[in-house]
Length: 128
Image (cartoon, rainbow, N blue to C red; front, side):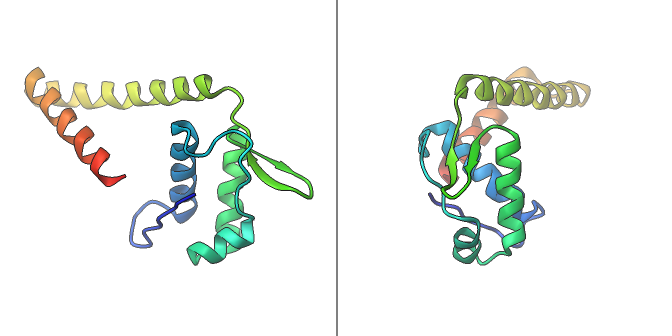
């Protein structure tokens, strides 16, 4: 599991951890049943507080991405991957609807919107 933290980002550290673990689970990089590093180990590896990693794990567990087993640690428990992917798609559609509405209000053409989305999509692929 690879997690890169940007301490200068406006995104809170725990949220950076959550987002990266979610992405790895949804992409299959972290398969179901995979044992995650312990809260203390991950905190030490990332040079963040234990509270930060604990909060990230709690959020991931609440959202159904991981399960904490007493005495064993936390494992990937994404039993309904398709449901979680659909939730992400719905969230994305909401963002896109707002972006398209704003672009139309500003007089931006369909072609320019599509071009911008394509450029952003390609740039996001390069960052991984």
